[in-house]
Image 1 (cartoon, rainbow, N blue to C red):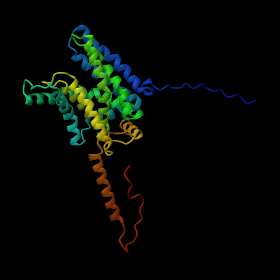
Image 2: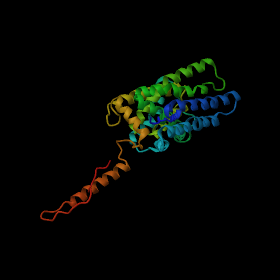
Image 3: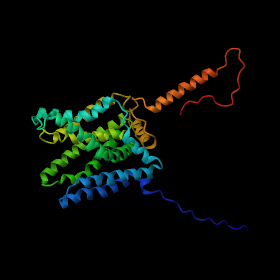
Image 4: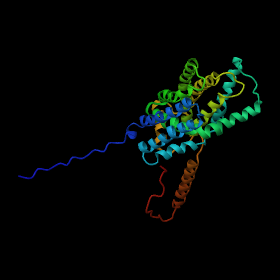
Length: 335
């Protein structure tokens, strides 16, 4: 009799939870740090700004980067952060991001009779808006906040469900992280209820607007970070009585931009499957930027192609000349 083979049991290595459920892992850390960070200063009666920065950098940005690395492997976190510097998209999109929300906010205020002249004058208020948008808002807070919400969470949800569903799934999560901010000093239940309703109404339109910007710019987190800051700054324009005007501006802009962008096939993938593929490429590939703006990489590739064609023409033997043996491939199409 031949001895029976003894099979040694193999221990299966389970994948990390963050790789199996990257969005869930991110949310557990975000809310685990974010809600206490925003609640503590309200209870203690101390300034909330340092705790807001703790939310952004420790509760949002850090888990987004770490989970990206775990779920996507080497290079995933770097790909995510590189999207924060993608500025090469057309000037019209930049103007839309920076100017549309404040312009519509002022228009709603003027039509409703809630607009007055700023105390410091129009020029000073314009400078204040630009500073609040680009420096205090985008550079310090909102780009890094949107790295987590738009660049990580919403991008992955759109890669799974498309623009509309991915945006709608991101909206309640984005709104929920802001709930402690509703209980500012001197709050009343009526004010909290109204502000919460406005937050819930505006969040789906706002996330959809940012999703439109992402598809139009090739996944630029810089674009949506500046848009986030512009919305915040528009809500604080001096001379406007109320907060609803900026929310109405975002709702109207989202609708108008959706209609216009859906008709422009060069700026938006057509169909849910195309949207999924585009969003997935931002996670797995190096950012390419706005397809309507020639990039340096594409220019170099065009130069390489032209040089290769020239070499191929020069290598073609003239009539009557002896053929030259080639030991390899003369030219290959760039991948």
